[in-house]
Each structure stands twice: as structure tokens, then as C-alpha cells.
Length: 361
Length: 102
Image: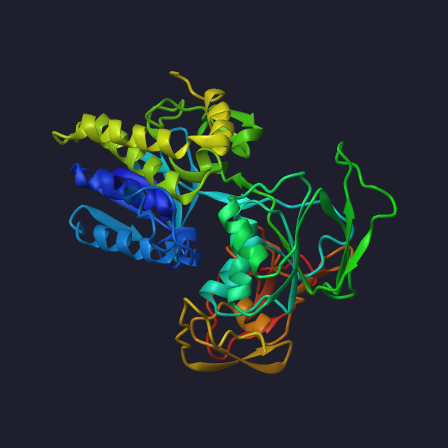
């Protein structure tokens, strides 16, 4: 049984920041990442981040991953990193089981920060299982990590920030985007992204959805239809699009399996993307040893995932007595940053959701 | 050609060219590819068929979450090819059943 002060599950933006914060305060850290490299979904984010300097604004996501990883490597006396290590289970006695390479390993940490992220949602339409229908994140991975185009002509479903950003990245990779559609009457993403896409000649069509994919072995076309104000299809408005890829960008769901197993109290909160754990303002779940950070707490952006990671890392370390002189100020700083990231209309939505799962208001 | 040769932000440093087989046919990819990205670049979108309906299956999430891309690799079934790195000489096969380890 491997013992450690704090185990962190997930080497994405939240997990990397949690590891940094915990080790900076003197705790020993074991960071688990199921992939062969750290960074989580940062590695495919080629756009420059918003937010403030503290959240690495104006730096591209892929670069942020490298910066955070370098910081951890400077603390190698306290931080051990396991890549190709998948957390399999989290038991009531606090034991974490891990598949490390081809080996089965047990870990007994004093505290755990779960930062497992999220998975892409799906959409119901005829033939939605055809090859050529890909999640927006999958398209990003294929293009920006592997350097392979998903196809020749894409229908993007979803005009939130991910849909808009990935559409732009498709254009950068030399792929045509036939249209971006969204069932909502307005564009969900930032207008700065939307304008950039429109200037490039891609139509953004609101109040429309996809009803059907065509093709025998893979996508050869799609049917879209207009929706009325009650989100019902308007007969006679069907349009056929000649596309070989349908990219689905309709949101994410928190990956919370480990927390369910560990007995954390969970609630269904649509504003946060699905079932999420009840937590206090220091990101501690209803199980004393377990903390959370990132998309698992509710779907937001990598910027807030990083701040949450730092907060959870600080809180977990301080609960074990690892405290620097600046602890109180650091925690306050995280809370202020989160507050600022959650201002504005999108933030209101998140805050409503957060209020439903906060155990200490 | 689906490989990106020019990009305004990214540069793709290709690894060594390696040969593998897909359903008995020789294909090529690069070190640094996943099995799925090498197949996709070679024009292969169908990675298997559903064990009951027989409908074609491709990848969906490309990060090892969804399980839509399961294939038989070097005789081992249920391999998530979207996250497994390509290696020279790999024998990759379409999977049309649930897969059996025994």
C-alpha cells in the first residue's frame, strides 16, 4: 500500500494546480494521470485564454500545461507523478485503487483531490451513431494534437464557446465549416468569437437543430430544421447539408464515478452540467478526506478549474497542518478570483447552480 | 489528404514513419499517432460494428471516455484505439463482437 499526504486524481488544469498548491505548502503529493502525458484537455487548446494574469490569460492552453508541469518538476522531492495511471476505485476506507501501466496498485492517501474533469454530452437524432459524428473535444484532439483533419466539410452543432472556438480551429486547419447551428434563439458563446467566425464567412444559424445524419458506413450528409419558440421543429424548413463530419458541441457532464463510489452526497444540478458533489466553500465534499476541483464540480472553463485546483490543494494541505504564512491570503485570493470569473450572465447561471450544492453558504 | 501540413499556430513534428496492418492490409502512420488518428488519416472511419445491430462504429470522444472505438489490437479485444499510441508492426482488426479474453 502506497501512502502519501495527498493523492490527486487527474493531471489536467485543476489537478496540476492542486498539486502545486499542496506541495508548495509542504505536503507530499501523488498525482495520477490516466493519459501518457499531463495537461488534460489543455494540450489541445490552441487559443489564448481570457481571465486575468493569475489564470495565465493571453497564453495558449497548450503552453499553460507545460508551464504548470515545469513548476511541479521543480518540486520533485514532494511531488510524484504517475502517468498512464488510471484511478479505478475509491473505497469507503479511503483506499484508492489504480491501474498503473499493467499493474494493480493500492494507494492510501490522507486526503484526496478528485479532479477527473468531464465527458462530452451527446444528442438524439436519426443515425446519430454513424462514424463521422464526433464530439467537439475529439475534433480538437485529432486536429491539434495528432495533426489530422476530421474530414472535408463540417456541420457544427452548438454555438457555445467550444463550438465557436473549435469551428475557428477547423478553419485554421484548412477544413470547411458548412454552418454552426444552435437550438437556442441566441448565440451562447462570446460575441468576440462569433464575430471572428462570421467574418470568415461561416453562417451561425440559431433556432435550428440537426434531425438526421445520412450515410451508409459514415456520414455523407445531414438534415437541419428550424425550431419555433417552443423549440419544436417547423415542418417544411428542412435543409440538407453536404457534410462528412457532424461535430457535437452541446456541453459536458462531470465525471463523478469515484465520488459516487466513495459515498459523497451528489445532487442533480442542470446549471452545472449534471450530477455534482455537495461541497463547502473550500471544495471539501461530504466525505471529510475528499476534495474536488475543476469540471467535476460543475462545468466551467479551464481558468476556473485552475483556481479551484489551487483552492482545493491549499485546503487539503491545511487540513493536514501544512500551512504557509500566506495561507489565509491565498485562500481569499482564490475565492476572489472565482468570484470575478463568475461575474456576468454566464456566471449568474453558474452561481445559481453553485448555491444548490454549497453546504456552508 | 487529411494530414495537416501547414497551420498558422501549430507545427507538427512527425515521428518516424511506421507500418502496421488493418484487417490484413498494410497501412502507414507516424510515431506519436494514436491508432485511431493513424487510421483516420489513412481514411478509415469504421473501427468496428455493434455486436447486435451490426451498425458501424467510429470514435466519438477521442480521449478514452466513451468506448465507441474498441478494436482488436495484437489479438487483444476492447482496446480503446483513440488513446493507445501506434507502434510499428501492430496488428489492428475491426471488432464486431463483445470481445473475448479467454
